[in-house]
Image (cartoon, rainbow, N blue to C red; front, top):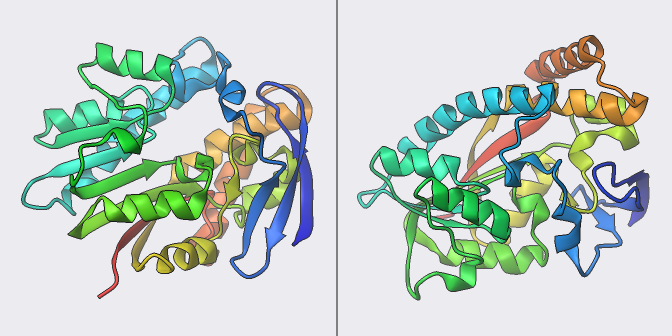
Length: 277
């Protein structure tokens, strides 16, 4: 594997990391991958674990999050099985599962961060610490990972577990950043969606299809996440220039989405996968 670029942890430690390119799968791998990943999430700025609304960026995040929750619900409804059972892995503070429960889903979730689990509990959502805590033999109609797959160590082992938890006709829905996007190419080492070392893997469309094919899964649909280009560009401007340049971020986010209408390389993509027949 060759060095793709060097970047650093802009959220917490300032430590430097390498991104190595796997040419077979066309994905990037964070090097080194720390043994104690938990400490890299111990920041008030890690918004998916805190529900923070202190800054303008936080407020923008939650405004977009509200829209995305409805969009996610619409998507899972289109793949609902007879039991309407769903497992959300990396459920954060539980907003998505709270909405799913309200709309008739039998909802389960996994979240390793204790603070996030406590916040979810306040919303009536009980989350488990890991997938090993799920009842033996339990199967799900839909399993979702919203910007979570890139965080999971031992990737093949984790995917094998996920596939094993899926019902025969079940659907796996995975959302991840796309390092082939225009905003990634523009910001290079400052691209916020690299988010090392919390993001261990950095996917292309080819890599997602190839990795899951090894586990008997086929890609049946991709769906763009238009808002991600703007939010990621806003954070990237801060990392690059030391301040949030809203007009520049909006321009790059817009350009990324416009270009992706032709290339299909959006800043983030949702992948819908089912068992290969």
